[in-house]
Image (cartoon, rainbow, N blue to C red):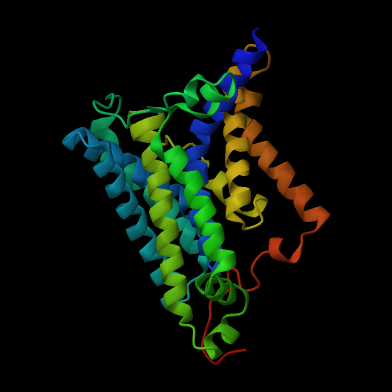
Length: 309
């Protein structure tokens, strides 16, 4: 086995497979930083995957398909925000219901689209010059889509917004102590709505990427639990957009290796590897303690009622 080629292939595919995880995790980080847990990421991603595929197949424009995927993710997130912020429903129950609803609806609507290859998938990019650099070129600058690079840039921008701007202070204040934020004149409900909807938009794009770029076709259940990995990655990344970058691509590498190593280990065990590793690292993180910035937001999962203590 050529070690260099094996390494290039593994890193390249890890980047490609980590894209939906990164987009979904960035959105979930913002929702949870505002104090709202959204366990409906899986449902939003599968709805995004279906709509992106069906729209792209019908129109021939993958960009429009991804836009529609973002919109359906945002609409699903709006429903979750209404239940949890306005009606103060249990956030965990609402999210689980959203996941089940999304999986069921996408499976129902997608029956007529099964097994059809996408006619016009999202094109891959190769950068002249950079792609010719030995080892690093094929790893990082060849056969990736624009969503790979946009995801990394977006993570940096979201980190700056969260930790270096007044908007970020408002978001973190709402997630940490909404009563204090309210007393300072911050509209708690509005901030939570916007962050949850933003998370839904990114989850929809992450799901859409699967069906128009990574595996340009539609298959029922094609997200295969990635939404749950996003939830784990949010904690693994300590609610930090920059840490989400390497976390997402690390889990992308685990997904790729679960297929690559089937000649050496049992396929059933390898398919469990990303999920088992998620449980292990979360357990280690919990036992090892966290810095203050890495702790879960103080009001995470708790509804806010004005005037209550």
